[in-house]
Image 1 (cartoon, helix red, strand yellow):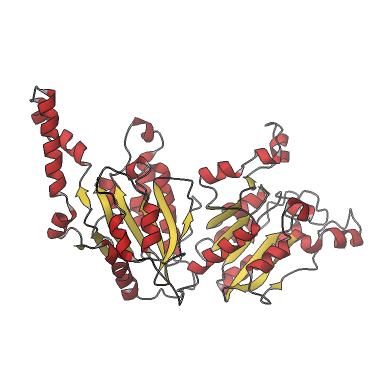
Image 2 (cartoon, one colour; image 1 turned 30 degrees about the vertical axis):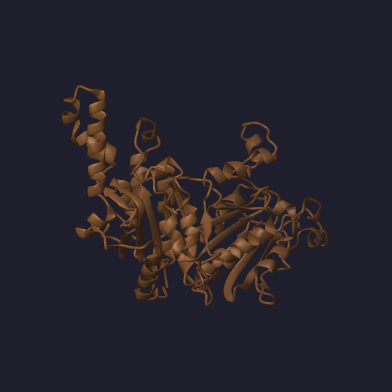
Length: 485
C-alpha cells in the first residue's frame, strides 16, 4: 500500500472513528477456500476475508464503518465477507446507525470453494444494503479501482466521495473481455474525469485522508446542530448581484457569505452545472441548499440540473434536513435540442419531489424569478415555502420578459414597418414589464412574503428554523428510499 501511496483498510477506519471507539466484527474470519488452500495460507493471506467492519463513533455519535481490504484478494467480495456485510447491515437497520463504506475492490470472487450453491445470486447483501436507503445515511468512499459488486455497493450510497485516482465501473477488465467487448486496462474504465462529470461522484478529493475528512463533515450534517459558529459580515451580500441585470455572477459567493463560515459542502459540483446543491449550516443548524447558477445557461434549468436538484431534495427530506433555495432563473431551458434529453420528464421531477417534501423550505429570490423554473425552485408556488422573500434585485414574471413581449404583442410589433422603431418599441415594452415585475411591486400584491435587505437573509432563515418543531424519531422510514440518481 505504501508503494502506491495508499493506506490500509484499518488505517482508514481508524482515521474515521473516534479514538478507542471501534470494535471489529469477524476479524478472525478467513476466505472460504479450505478445499483448495491450507489453513495457514488462508490465515496469512485472507485475514477477515478482505472486509474490516464494525461499530464505533464519529463526532461522538454511533456509526458503522466498513472497508474492503485491497491487500486481500484485491478487495473482492467473498462468501464470508458477504455474510459479515449482512450482519452489519442488519445492525444498521436495528440500531438506526449511519454507515460509512470504503469500497475499493474488484467485485465478486469466483474462487470460494467452501460455499454451497451454484450462482451465488441468493446472496442477501445487496438487498439488505439497498433496503437501508432512506433509513440511515449511507456514505460511500472510494480510492483506486472499484468494479462490479463493489461499484454496486458504492452506487447505492447517498453520497459518493472518491479520490482523483479512482476508477469506478459496473464491470472490470475481466468482465468486459469475457463479454467479448474488448481488452482494456483498469485505468481506462470509469476514470474520475468521466465519473465526476456524469454525476456518479458527488465529491472529488485528493487522497484517502481528505476523503475521510469529507466523510466526517458529511456525517456531521445528519448528527444535529453545532454549538459554535461564525459567519461573514452579512452586509457584503448587498454587493454580490451586479447592477447590470444581464451580467452573470458567482452564486457560490452568495452561498459562502450567507451560511456559516466553513460549513458548506457542495455535492456533484461538476454535474448539472446550472444547479448548485450543498449542505451548509445557519447558526450551527444543518440545511440543504439548492441554488440556480447564472454562470451556466443564465440559470435556466435543464435535465441534468433538474435531476440533480430533485435527488438532493429527496435526500434532505428523507433525513429531515430543512432546505433553502436561492432563486435566479429565467425558467426551464427550451429548444429542440434540449427536448431530446427528455426535458419534460426530467424538469417535472422538481415539481413532483418539491411538492411532496415535508421539511421546512425557505426560498430567497436573488434576481430572476420567471415561469415554471422559478415555481419548481419553490416547491411549485411562491406560497409553498414557509417563507418566500426576495432581494431588491428580484424580478418576476410568468415567463421571460423578452419572450412575453414577443408573444403577447406580436401583432403590434409586426405592424411597425421601420426596424429601428420596432426595436425601440419592443425595448420600451420590455422595460415596462420589468418595472411591473419588480420585487417590491410583486410583494405589494402579496405574491411573496417580503422584499428584504440581503443582509437579513440569515435572520429570515433562522426564524423559520427556530419556529419549526424538531423532527420526530422514527421507527421506520420517512421515504421509501433515496433515488440513486
